[in-house]
Length: 431
Image 1 (tube, rainbow, N blue to C red):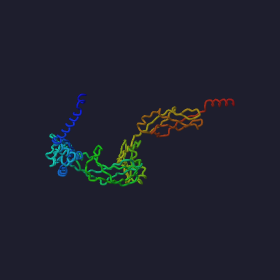
Image 2 (image 1 turned 90 degrees about the vertical axis):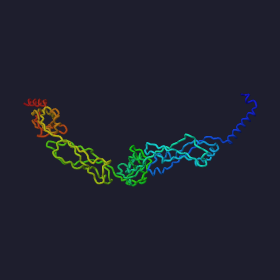
Image 3 (image 1 turned 180 degrees about the horizontal axis):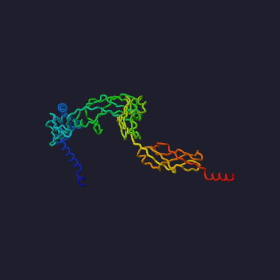
Image 4 (image 1 turned 90 degrees about the horizontal axis):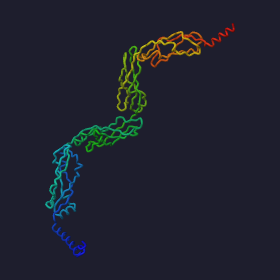
């Protein structure tokens, strides 16, 4: 290796330079053929014809309208370089896709439109596209469909405490939508949204954009709308909870009484003009009428609402009023006087052996009572020695009452035994 670079080095370098020069001279003189790559934008042909004449929509227009292709051209090197360096190929080379060559008009079918490459007269014959470079443009076409939808108003945020928005409506209330059939078929609603935070008075809000949504709440884009903005009149009302008051007019069957009246719900929330709602404390129900009621019965009266007042959140105007009815009976009980407590400082003995009482109440409650459960007492702390007839007080279970004659017992009060002995001793001494 050292011998190669060491001997006649000058001649070797001169020979290399000379060879390169000769090669460049040959290349420039002969101008050989070679291949060069070009990026060409695709022109959409007959787009307007397809959309107007056939009433179709290109659903992937955004994807294809800026489509480019890369082609390999073959020609003389100097011609290709001149074409590319001067950027003239954008005018001299055309790539065209004729959309009128479509076959399918469904969202799940793709039209493969051939892309035709052509050259201007100046370069025709000088450059040509290499073989096996057939290209297609994927175009999706759909039939146009039109529908009319009502515009709904959504409120977001919280109004000031106690105030509510009453049935906001958009003006105009409908919109016409036009677009690809597959998109129109997904339309579930058209909505405008308003932030109602801190709103306490009625007002009009304009320039609201209606947006289109599917049944999952996802916005649908790419549709033509007959209107681009709407206005909404916001009517503000007062909200308040009020109790319900039943109006009952009826009779119960003989021996039956009501044991309770249950209203479901017991109170409701109403909304309406502030001056009207502020005066409401209760709402009456339509009259409940019955005769000889002998069982638990549920009625469904309607809530009577003042003019301009409604139930919050569209609650049902009918409520459930359940009237509980039970049969009453009277039962006799004999209570031993030995179980009756006595309040006194004297000695005593009962002359009566027992006391008879009559208790009235609901049948199942009366049947659960025994004599041992009835506690009676008398207070003779202010009575002197001797026989007395006194009233017995009974502590009765809830919903049980005493009927008939007042229960009385006869009792005899006596001096304590020690005091009697002292009295007898004094009497003996005196004698």
